Structure formats: C-alpha cells, structure tokens
Image (cartoon, rainbow, N blue to C red; front, side):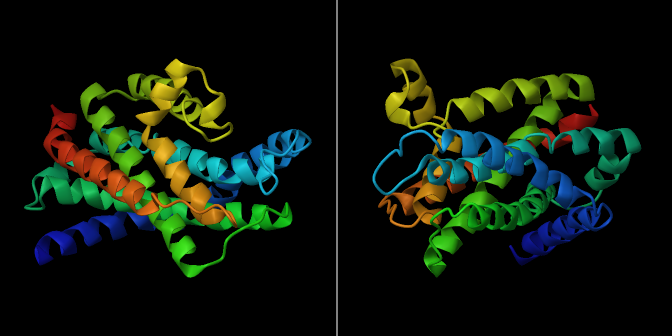
Length: 254
C-alpha cells in the first residue's frame, strides 16, 4: 500500500508540474466563472429572491464553482491521447507502476488544478456580497467536494479517451456530455421547478450531489444533514471510475 501511494504521488507530482509551465492558465480559468457571476448572475439577481435568506446570486455561486470543476475535468482525458501520440503512455505502461496508480495520480493532479478555482470563486463571491460560510468544517467540505468531483469527472474523461482513442471523437463526446450534466443538475435552478423527467435525471447526476455539498457548505445558513452521505457517494463513484480506468488505461495504445 505504501508503494502504491508513493507511486501515485510521483505521477501526481509529474502531472502537477505542468501547471507551473503555463502561467496564463489561472487567468483563463477565471474568465468563465467571472462572466457567469458578473453577467448572468447579476441579471437574474434582479428576480425575486428564492427565499427570505437566499438570493439568486447566492444560490448560483456554488453551481458555478461546480460547473468550473466539471468543465476543467471533463476534457482532461485529451492529455492521455496526446501522451499516447508522443510515446509517453507506452513508457508509463512498461514500468512496474500499477495501472490504478497511474490513473489515480493523473486524477489527483486534475484535482489540484481545480483548487485555484475555489479561490477565484470565493474572491468573486466576496466582491458580489454573497453570504459565505467561513466555518472550518464547511471549508473542508467544499475542498473535499471539489477534489472528489474533479477526480470523478477527470477519470470519466480518461476512460472515454481510452475507448475512443482519437482527439476529434473525444472532443465531440466531451461536448455532448458537459451540457446534459450541467443543465440536468441544480446548478442554476432548483430541482423543484424541473419537469418530472428532468428531476429523475438530476437525481442520478453526480454533479447534483456535488452542488448540494457546495451549496450547504459555502452559503451561510444553508445546513444539510446529508453532506457526509453525499461526500461518501462521490467518493464511491470516484473509486469505481479509478478502478475502471486502471482496466481501460492500457487500451489507449491498442
């Protein structure tokens, strides 16, 4: 187990170093959530509040954080295709490193890439006077939800890349997946106002549970007794995705 953890951390460090070589990446990641909150959120803020203690901008902010994590992670698999074309994947596969350690290391590096997004969203939320919860347990739950969500969606992306094998087909599938996952969740509107068929989809959408954790943890006065349950659910799905990735990873070169 210690060897597995050590090898996973080596892969994570190797992948995370790529972030340091692209100083513009953080700026580019800030653009999309800023546009959503400053334009879309400010416009719909003029609507009637969702409740006496919750404005639309408050409601939307955790959803935009989840959206940013989804959009960053869901296209992570294209790096696997690039690595295959450059011969890097073949070098990984001839090492004694377990396939699951390779997949988990890459997934954890994707999770590290989403951590600055938390800081960006919190900064924007402060500027827009969103009522945030600063309790340590709540901040920990936000971090865990973002990390688990990123691992889940990045390994889903990696699994798709291992199956489709071409950049063009992968980009098409990634674009098809992002919109249904986002709009079939409670990111920008409550589940209560959805039609019955969309409610059913939202209840099997892992992004919905990630948003539930973020909304109850980020916002002041929005407690949720199911936060731990949702975290365990995300963790279970993420583990299943990593194990599946360990099986499929070698197929990327076939």
